[in-house]
Image (tube, rainbow, N blue to C red; front, side, top):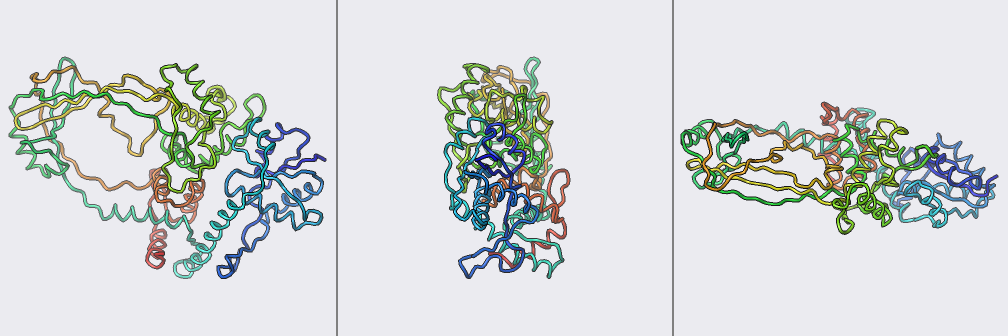
Length: 527
């Protein structure tokens, strides 16, 4: 029997660790949570310091039995559940269960955490164990108690007032409210008409279009030309007039890379760039973290994927900078490593940002060993990590004002002069830019006459705010400080499973049931 027993959450992680730790260690998996609140009233007692009553999770009882049996034989017990609040709580629950068993009352397990599953990181963690961090356990229990009190008290009320099988929750209900309120905004929205005026001109073979920005010395706002009649009057006044260059402004612009991935930003970019759901993204990231055989045995390819932090370790920064200098080029390496600060109010920065465990394991080198999803996600994480330490992209921007009668038309062109980080990765946005500014203008001089090829008006109508997709919902939840990024995938699944929302063209629409539940909760439970 091995003298060391190490407990992890998942069996696939156990396989990877076995390779690093050898025959001295027996490694068993708890298969997630081992205890949960009893499923009846009184599991949390608010009048008695929120005392909580737990019971074994039935489906994991046989795994707990195996852990108890192995613990009786082992000299050292290491609890290596995931390095987050849930993982800390699972370790504490295991310790509490073991203390009740005969012969294990005085057991003193040691807690180890693996932020990445590579040989060095694992051996380093085993060499520096610690005790269980009770503040983290308390934080997890507080959340679990709140989930229970909200869910257990509100859900039966929904069954009574609306129908059975419905549920309310600390996070799912605010998420549903966001979707319903957006739907109400869309319904209440009244489209407003407005017009814009445009000038088509050219110089040599270069054609360009400018937009009217000023008329009779007044700056034009969105609704300055609210109707066809108003634009027709301006159009008539400008027709037949000559055009000349009134002003030229040239600026040098630069654009900095985005921070490395947190759980939330990884989910958002995977939705936008890869078309993956948050749930699929988190499952794939878990596989990359726990270890994949890339030719020399299983190895964790990314650091822990549940994190709010945008910081990178000094070793990682050194390696990334070395890679940029040697593989991409010295021009792309800034003089010093870039440091990023988190914007999230309630961020927990115990971990690093999500990054490859080694930047020298390039996406192409590991591609033969990965599934399509694993490769796409790993490539995105790798590119974002490398790009975050690269030099800014540089642009020459030219703005030309063209005078026609009492009007000033403006056209902007932009030319990339140095790709910088954009040669590796570009962050996606919610509303993809139409690229209007990324065009080159011909050389022009102030006072130069230009041909008027056409002057015309264009009709527009304001559009309602868009429905949430998974990326924008995750972003909104994070901005409001609702829930944890690691739970967003399960929140979204719950809303779909309860039939509170449907997905149409990848955007959320509340169902009748969802709207009734939301109305009931917001009217009667404002607190």
